[in-house]
Amino acid sequence: MRPCETGAACPLVSSDASRLTAKQSNGICLHEMPRKIRQLVSDLESASFVLVPGGKGSHRKFRHPRYPGAVILSGRDGDDAHHYQERQVRNAIREVSK
View 1 (cartoon, one colour):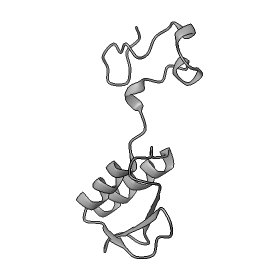
View 2 (cartoon, rainbow, N blue to C red; view 1 turned 60 degrees about the vertical axis):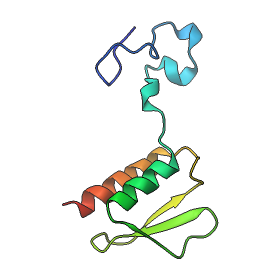
View 3 (cartoon, one colour; view 1 turned 135 degrees about the horizontal axis):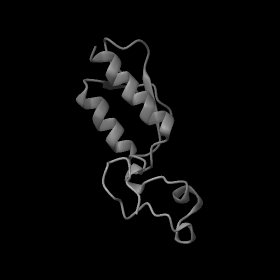
View 4 (cartoon, rainbow, N blue to C red; view 1 turned 60 degrees about the horizontal axis):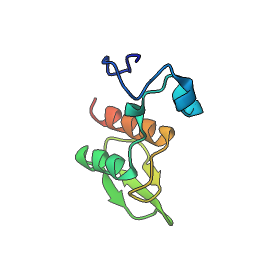
């Protein structure tokens, strides 16, 4: 077993590539599973972002008085968040907490 990014030996990351998918065999720990859209929405709401009208379909628009523009999240609550969505939410929260 190799250590994952958490620093401990992770049974989910192995050098035995025959049992792993292509993505896992590159040494990616499964602790790095994508977050759910509902978690990103919760993070935004905890940081005082407000859901405003204007999103179409599965798109939701969040605004904050100290954040220029808006954060738009697409997808249903149970969908996996894309990396760019996680990054956008993380950067938006970092910006308003300065």
